[in-house]
Length: 637
Image 1 (cartoon, rainbow, N blue to C red):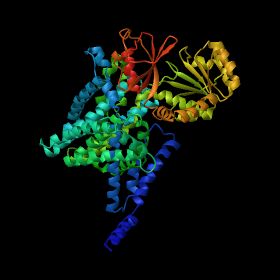
Image 2 (cartoon, rainbow, N blue to C red; image 1 turned 180 degrees about the vertical axis):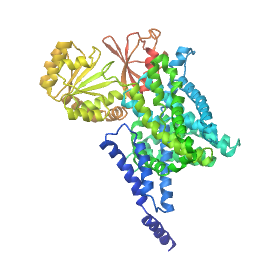
Image 3 (cartoon, rainbow, N blue to C red; image 1 turned 30 degrees about the horizontal axis):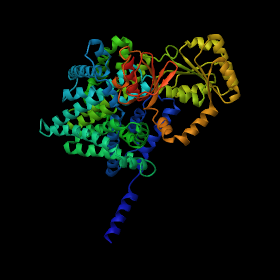
């Protein structure tokens, strides 16, 4: 009888809960991307709209909500916040940071070229500048704890930096790597510093402060344990069998990992939970390799599809504009000076990049890493709860976060515009879906791609997707003069019409004597005509047959290459370093995430072994990560 009654109570609770508040938040989350798309505001981070709509909803729709309704909204917002920190740790490529560790005796030149050392120096400079700015701001308003306030200002947002660089195709460039590592270093050190600071403010220099170090020990234990488990045949088999359908064991394991770190952090102190969630993401980042891309898609879907919008919408809902009244006449002056300070403490240290990239490029990078979002809001919320900042300062911080994450990418793109014309690029004639996919995949490799499309509606559609495109005619000689066609530029002809492809190929060969031409053909009978001109062809029938053949004969290899494209691929790297000449493969320090597949020497192909001798001029076919490719180029180049 008691069991039946308990079941009834459970059903009674679930069916009588007021789902209206959840409906409002879910509607806002659903509407946000639609608003951005309809009004062509795709460059504006969606979280800005979510914060604004959350504030509006609180003013007009949240009246009369029960205490229980707010509790469930706050819970989802809190978990969304923790999930955001987890994804923040997951976004950081630990291999990339480790690859930047100095391996040779440092000189000024090597120091300036090392992204990790420069990033650490920039962060140290930012701390000093932030503290100085906080002292100045304290003359205008009351800041209860200047040190904690300065830590709030020094934060940055990798989540804003990465998409901007990816859209511009700069993620694989040296400058892009400098920015990414500087932002990652700022993220990691900011979280660590204000976690320790918050703990000391609340508990003093207590022996429990040492418990925080236990989190880092836990991080190391989980890293070692999971790496050992994933190599056990039984565990690998179970992981593969239960990774799909209803089981989704890897996703469940990720949630378990978050909660293990969060629960242990809670026992240390509430202010440590943020660091725990971040470290759980960092653990997963260090162990994910081939599965990384697919896992990120699933976890992003969970986070940004449901939990994370709750966090930002509730930030807007809890925003209190009346708290700004505490500043009286000093409000405008404080906000202006705060905004200037937030940019200055990132822009001034960015001048360390000046010797490599020039002043304008360096300053533009400083503006980009000035973008702040989740971390600054989180640090401010914790500070408000600890009483080290006032509610007025907290509201000001939220306003600054909105302004910076919108303004920083805009200023960066304005100061450092993408030059569609100059430099090494792949020119794609025709804006088909294949062309768009190719441009995106090239951008993932950090290579510039430019589409030529004559149809205006298709041109606008491609431009709206953030892909480099010009509205020109592919058969017009002047088009290629205007886009500055160079001999080393590949031209891919993808108009969808064999005869049109042939005419463009003939024009490029006759007028420009261009050699690097690739064209798609749909009929094998056209092959001879293209061959006579020396044009590389892609026979779609042959390619389709080869893909189906691979699925039948070597399905695991095929899926591994296709699914892991964003993290693993094959590249050709030539040996130009004379110190490598005459060395055996086993004596060359290859990156651990790079596998030497084949060696091309003049017209001969060699299967490499440990005792294979390498020569200057050899072309190596290497399989691995982008970080491994960069490291291998430095070794061999």
